[in-house]
Amino acid sequence: MVSYASLLIGYLLGSVSFSYLAGKLLKGIDIRQHGSGNAGATNTLRVLGKGPGITVLLLDMLKGVAAVWIGGLLSGGDALIQVLAGLCVIAGHNWPVFFGFRGGKGIATTIGVMVTLAFLPALIAGLVAIATIALTRYVSLGSLLFTAILPILIWFMGYPVAIFILSLLLFVFAWVRHRSNIGKLLTGTENKLGAKRQA
Image (tube, rainbow, N blue to C red):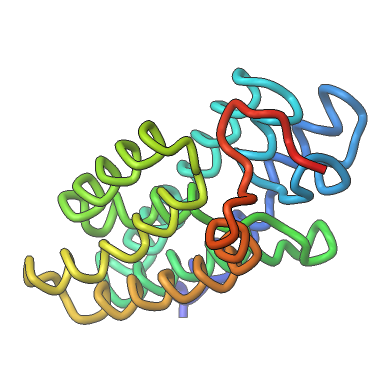
């Protein structure tokens, strides 16, 4: 039973919204009422600047790493518990109990989880995502490609089925959370990194 406590811990850890806290501490604002309205690293970058944006990105990634690590520690290294803890921390980030269940899109936390569970696939998918963002300046496109490529790499590299299933779930999570971005990408109205947000 102790191992299952890591799932609750993961969710509560994910529910700590560093983007929201940064907005309150630095400007006294609710970040969800500015920019894209998303409580994540990209919107923090746009609204608060590079320093807070990078800090939120790293902290959100660390949430994912910590949740998987805690799951492994409390379960004696049970891979399924680690996977479930990773799922719970991302769910917490997306639907945080502390902030009215209005959170971010979970990409930075997903990176933290997958880097811990499947380092090489996450690294390769991450490099593709970074190159895509650098070339197009569409963070959403890079994020979507990251989650789309991961399951393919994890499957062909022979990782455990539980990790493969997690990657598929995170793919669904990401694409559902980014559905408005997908529409904007298709119509050419998506905001580019470094550009002023369109009305």
